[in-house]
Amino acid sequence: MSGVDASIALPFLGFVAGIVLGYVARANRFCTMAALEQHWYGSDSTGLRTWVLAGSVALAATQALIHFGLIDISSSFYLSSQFGLTGAIMGGVMFGFGMALVGMCGFTAVVRLGGGNLRALVVLLVLGLAALSAQRGLTGQLRIRIVDNLAIDLSAAGDQSIGSLVSYASGMDLRWAAAIVLVAAALAWVFADAGYRSKRGQIIAGCAVGCVIAFGWLVTTWAAKHSFSPVQLEAGSFVVPVGDAIMQIVTYTGTIPDYGVGLVFGTLAGGALAAWRRKEVRWEACDDGRELSRHLLGAALMGVGGVFAMGCTIGQGVTAVSTMAVSAPVVIASIAIGARMGLAQLVEGSVMAAFRRNGGAAHTPAE
Image (cartoon, rainbow, N blue to C red):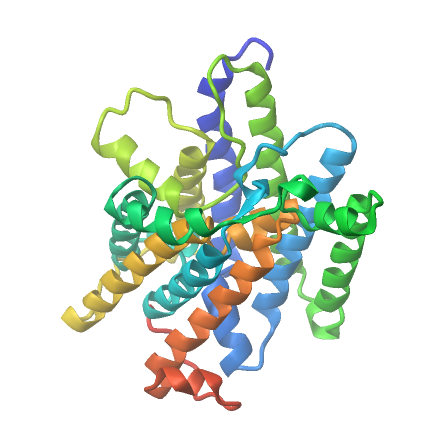
């Protein structure tokens, strides 16, 4: 690969990784919204365990690559010493609520679009534009005031990784120990269910998703070392990269697409391939104006919320987990709260139902 310009290779590498990600997700129904809904309303934790497995594998693989000196992700924005707590909470709740309104996150929308789901197309267009606004536009001015300007400074610990924070508090280097404990605890919960241990497809899916994230860190680290231009270290997210993909399509940016854009298009291709092989390709659209309006609102909330929280169910739920960023558990919990509130509004008729002990019948609004 030494003869290949890194800036040109990155989108192609992202595309390849995306094909794997999209195919595995479509073939094994890897969907965070469905996982949460089945857990709450169907007492089925299969999807949730697969999601946790993906994060665990990503964490183990990423930390192993760091330990052996194969990658250096210290400059990743997930490990910034400035921890935007307000954004993690507010953005996570917004994202989760929006995800419930449309029945899918940005990642799942890309996968479903590959099978002909036009609702997913609406979601991605609005999510991408809302994300660009929150990152660079008018909404971004609000983000600066209520997130960036209120960020907690963790520079004394070096960065915001749980390993660094524990090491700083104890006075000893416990980063590797922290990673081992987190992975062991997560895997113990995942495989504590005897029924899940027999679900080979789900286990393969979780491991594959986690490995794709680690692969992203590996190739972007390689590119950062060999490129003459700055390269953003990234591994997988479906908020801002969706907006960047839209920009690459509609206008000449003067820049080569990055790894994230390649990952988005690859995931679309992988989802399409899986849908074709499973004979699931069919056009789907909103039934009426009410459903369309719900998708528009939900997508906008996900776009803005995803930028405020600096990630989505994949960006924070798997990628940030792989770095042990302290933002990950905060955002994940906030997304779960938002999703529970959104489902309570749709299924039970009131947001307050989310705080009652018993839920109603299962229902997926986007399907």
